[in-house]
Image (cartoon, rainbow, N blue to C red; front, top):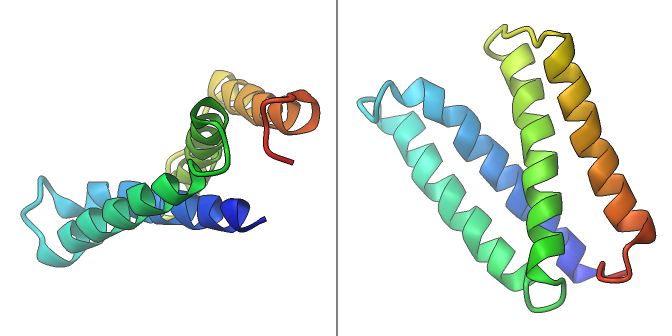
Length: 110
């Protein structure tokens, strides 16, 4: 169970870091730049803890898939970006893939 807590923390840290990238203006602004560096450091450390229990392919699929969805939501809420229908469908397929892995894969750590 702790592996999924670590995975959730890794995802949140990665989403914060990735979302802050836009605000760095090419790493010319200090606070957002620090958020990026610290966020990615936390994300990768937490992911390394996850990999003690969950296979790398499964952990990365969940990490990347949920990260994509959450960063897209941040883009909508914070940056006013509006995804078009193909983007929404693609994100939906990513979510479906993560759900299939969790529900049906024997590789996943349940």
